Length: 507
Image (cartoon, rainbow, N blue to C red; front, side, top):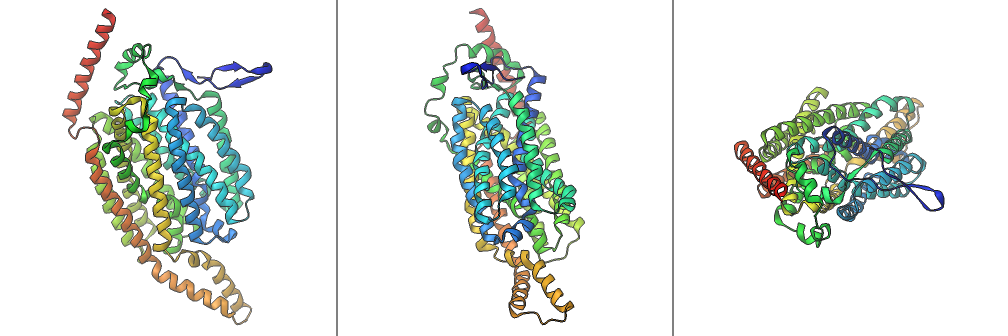
């Protein structure tokens, strides 16, 4: 699995060529897939680590909540155009984009971010990380697609999709274990940066990719392997890559990418603001909020794998997307109803876990279906199709994050509340009359607490609307609703492969 080591100028050594000339055996492919999943988990851990300590970080950097949201929006916008740039991975490969992107993000997370002292400095560092992550958002699922035939694609995509989820779970788990000891938001970035550089070393040594002649073909099942390798010998790569964006501009590609983008509003809200929501609306501690996140992301990870395996076994995607979307919308509605009430920790855990189970089911099968929809137009342009998806999802999230402060206006006073309350209690303990600015701040906190539940409910209704749009776009995508019809298609494909092999062997 080690990359090719090529001699450079002046006797130096450089490592660059990571291409595999033959399609790897099943065990080797699984090792590649696991490495890509580990890389994805690490990158999303590095992207999301700040959200796990947001209330502490915002207070220390004196960063108002709207500024925090605008920084996240700007990062998503940078990531959107980085995703378009990553469409070049169809022509120039995927592996080196991933390897050296890991190095850049690891160094930034370990050395730059822990030393920032202002909102501007943190925003700049987050922007660079978001740009690199936008590229890898396209390159890593493209690698998964390359090493995963359509039969088994949902399972493989389940493991890739688990990357963002396990990234979120890693944030909450590491915070739960280490934050009580180190007690600083900077410590979480140091831990994260060290982990990122360790994974970079693994990727530098072992990450490989298929040669263009192999990856640019459609592979439905492992039985296609011989045919793919034979065709690779005469494949016109330049012709297959001509006018890539024009080849991908189809209604099924655009509509499905837009649909999943608005569905993910609920996910990005949980990732970016879940801890803030729980702390400011339900008065959870940071530890309690991270503990709930552990349950939520753990359930989501389970759903991604189980739904992927079952979808592959039944050979259909659309029924899982529909059931996941409808169930996710219902559970999100139940979740928003809890704002303004006094639900127990257990009730919120159950609602959030069931909601994320449904959403995981919808998303993993969508990922498999989307790559198959792209392949139906041109399997050589998988990264280009994924670049369109990455661009749209980040543009949608950017637009909605820009709108969030206009809907949810109460966060900043509630984040600052513990400090003002402590000052008020200290004044009373010292038998000192609290100063007027302190009393005004306490009044603003009380007013914010009264309106916060309603504001968050309005935002979650917008997220439910996004799920409704996603459900409507399912019908544009390729694939069967019936397992029997899907198996008939597979049998017909196997017969066609057998005929082509027979013809090639005869010639």
